[in-house]
Length: 76
Image (cartoon, rainbow, N blue to C red; front, side):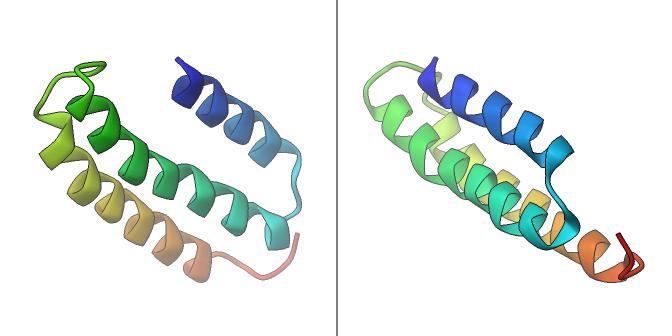
C-alpha cells in the first residue's frame, strides 16, 4: 500500500514539476518499483511472479520514458 501511495505522490508531483526536475522524480518511481516489488513478493504481499516480472518490466518502461524525454523539445 505504501508503494502505491509513493507512486501516486510522485505522479502528482510530476504533473507540477518543470522538465528538468521531472526525470529524477520519475526515475525514482520506476526504480522504487523495480526494487520494492521483488521484496514484497518474498513477503507474500504481492504475487510471486512480480519478483521476476517487475525488474525487466520497469527497465523497459524506464528506457522508453528516457528516450521520449530525450526526443522531446527542450523548451518548457
